[in-house]
Image 1 (cartoon, rainbow, N blue to C red):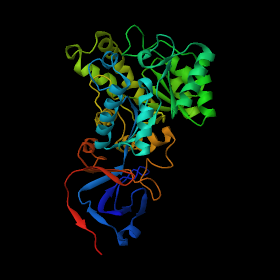
Image 2 (image 1 turned 30 degrees about the vertical axis):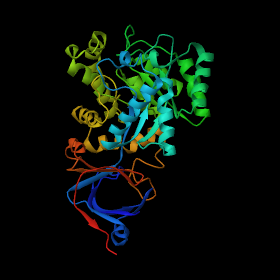
Image 3 (image 1 turned 90 degrees about the vertical axis):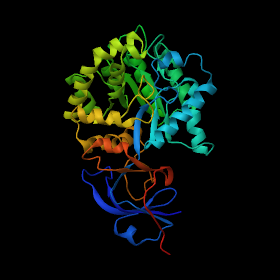
Image 4 (image 1 turned 180 degrees about the vertical axis):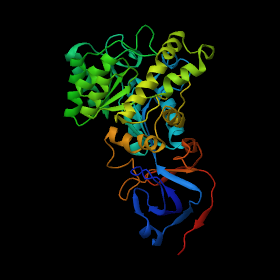
Length: 402
């Protein structure tokens, strides 16, 4: 079936400006944009007057098996794989219905995210495109160890990396530092060492896969960059040297500003563990400063939320984008970070991330202009993944002219 959208303001992910145009797509890809689309026949025609079309959004950092409850690590301790699978499916629906067509899941017990990805790709269930890491690799007692493979030394890390690749991981998630949510660890402290990180990066590269490092303290960040990591997650304590290293190597930053922000906003009275609140309060200002400095100096920034952490709900990607604007990023750069740049970080930019002829018909239609007000992305009208509509709000449609 061919669908035509007329009179639409298009942000294609490549350019900073929008153009008013017509596009046509089928169940898979974008067929034409502009004059050729205007004269083409279609099975249905959508009048896009007053709407903006952007590429389907991409969240580079989610945890589908976590709900955003006050203490998600504790909540998950008694869960079976089936419990987590149902939860992940539900959270995936929240993502795509909000306009997030692609998610990168960077950590789940028992590789539930890999299983859900496979089920979606096989057509068993419907949902967003999932780029899945499965279980993270951490040092013994390291950050997130309750849902991870614990490994110490190069040989054990190499074995863990190969195990995850065998299980079907699209990327390897590695813990380079401590974190906010795990009790008894310092976000500043290095964890997996440079040699351990490097061997995992080598195994991933040999398999044509990418890597992501949870890296908050500056020494751990530098270890990860030197090791060849694809994306630095969080990047709370960046200095000029670390930023220079990222620029030199083309390392991406996935800032996840919403993670500490939500913990601080909701605070102790919400039931969030005291250790998490205290650590979030201590890191948030430095986190925001590091983000702005990295942006100003030209580090490639891919948007990610850390959805599933306390009160960081699936389907609320826009809070992250609003925080990026609030902390100094231009609206068009924010939109690119959530589309084009994110697709590049995942190495799926050959199929999605921009609205171009031949790319997947991953499209989000919203009311208003997100280049003027990023919060317009909350006013979702239609969501398409590969040409199939996953969410639709009633708007004026025209029957096809035969």
